[in-house]
Image (tube, rainbow, N blue to C red):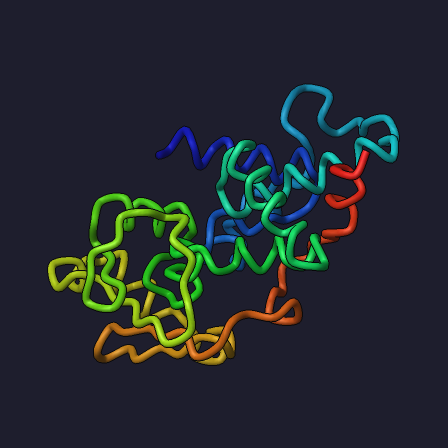
Length: 208
C-alpha cells in the first residue's frame, strides 16, 4: 500500500495537477503536491516540452483512470458502454461515479477510493443486506450501503466518518452516521462531479 501511495503522489506531480488520490490528506498542507508541486527526478523543476493535442487527450484519460483506480481494459469497457447511451463523455463519468468503491468513499466510510476498494474486496461492504465484494458494482436508486458490524469500530472508518462534513456528501446520496447507512436517493448528474475533468478530451482521444 505504501508503494502504491507513493506512485499516486508521483502521478499528481507528473500531471502538475492535484488529483485528490489520497483522499482527505489532499485537502491538508501534508499533501505532497502542495509540498512539492513539480515532477519527480533531478530535472523535475526544469519543466517539460509542450504537449501535443494527443498528449493532452491521453493525459486527461490517464488522470481519470488514476482518480478512480481502474485498469485500461476496464476503462475501455466503460467507454464502450457510454457510447451507446448518448453523450459518451458525460455517461462515462456517471458510470464511474456509480462504482461501489467510489460511493463508499463519497459517503465517508473510507478516506480514499483505494481504501474503499480494499474494504469491498475483503467483503466488508453490505448492499441491500447482501455482501458485495465487487468494487465495480454499479449502485442503483434506493440501494442501501453499509459496512459490516466488525468494521464499524475500525479507527480508519471512525476517523473518516467523523471528519466527513455532511454538506460534502453529494446530494444524490444520503448518509445516516449513527446507523452507518448510506442510501442512493437518485442517480448522479454531471454537475454532481466536482473533480476538474475535461471528458471531451477523452472522447476526442477514442474517436481517432
